[in-house]
Image (cartoon, rainbow, N blue to C red; front, side):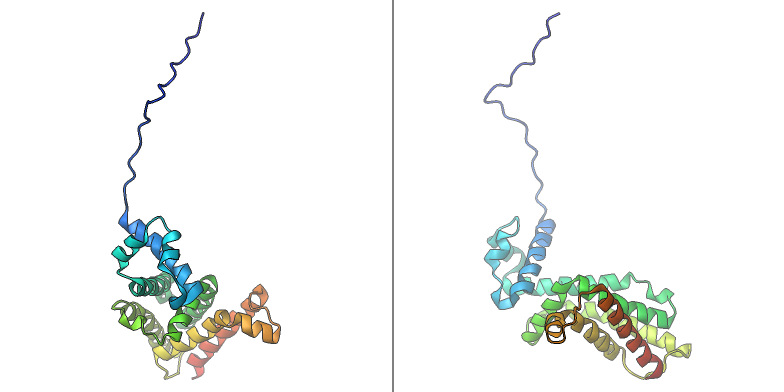
Length: 224
C-alpha cells in the first residue's frame, strides 16, 4: 500500500498569527523595574531615560507618556519601593504576637528586608543627598508610611497595658532607631568592612548583628 505524502505548503502561504494584546499596566511595571535599577545605580542626576527605554519593551516617548518626565518617573519609583516594604510589613500579622515578640519580629524583618533589597537602601540614600526634594512632591509617600508608625504605636500601647514596655518614647522615634541600625548595615557595609576588616555579608556576622539590633530595640522599650 502506497502511503500518500502530505501536501507541501505553498511558498507564499501565510501562517495565522496571534495578535498580542497590549497591556499598559505591564508596560508600566516593566518601566518601573528597569528605572529602579537605573536610579539606584546612577542616582537621579546620572540616570538616563534613554538607558531605561533601551532596557524595556517600550520607547522613550511612551515613558514620557506614562510618567510625564524623568522626575515623575523617579518619584514613582520611590513610591513603589516604599509601598512595597509597607505591604510586606502588613503581612507579618504582628497583632497576633505578644508585644515583645512583635517588636522583635518587626526589627528582624527590617534587617533582613534591607539586606535583600539593597536598591531600596541606595534609593533612600540618594534621595537624602537631594534633601528629599523629589520625595516631598509625592502625594502618596507620606500616607503610605503612616502605616508603620501606626503599627509600632499599637504594639507599644499593648506592651504598656501588659506592663512589658515602660519607655515613653514616640513610635516615630522607635521607627527611626530601628531603621537607622538596619539601614547602616547595608549602606555602610563596604566602608565599615574595609576599615575594620569585617565582612558584613557573612551569614554569621549578619545573624549576630540582627540579634543585637533586635535586643537593643526591645531593651529600650522595656527599660527606657
